[in-house]
Image 1 (cartoon, rainbow, N blue to C red):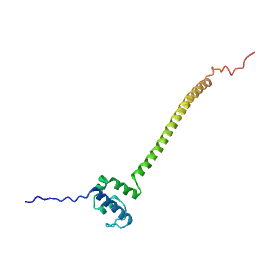
Image 2: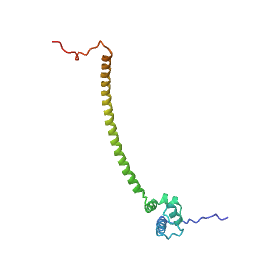
Image 3: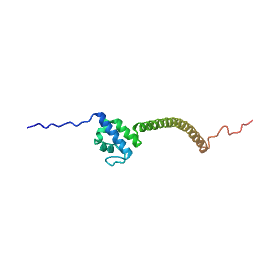
Image 4: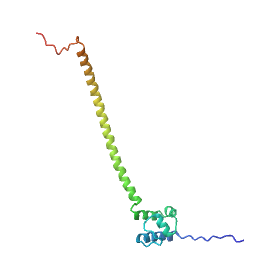
Length: 142
């Protein structure tokens, strides 16, 4: 019996990368062998005769070139998200400062409210009790 020998038909990485770039170019030019018109990683993989996992795992620069051709570069998306994060952090800091100031105002108003409530209690007690006479209200006798 002869052992089954499997001939390895692997292409060097440089050749595979060139095939992937050519597949991307053919799809961009509308001359794809598979008839693909939309630029996606799946379409490029089919055009080049490889799996999408190969592109993702071994050719990240090709995957990035595909994303750029789609108009959604991961670098650009990251930069936009970073700018959004910075803006939200600034808003958050401003809101925290505003909350701090409002809490101080609330505490001040609560203190003032307690003083006024106490004065109201005293005045109501004076009005309800006829025996209590305000000394300032009496006219001085000469």
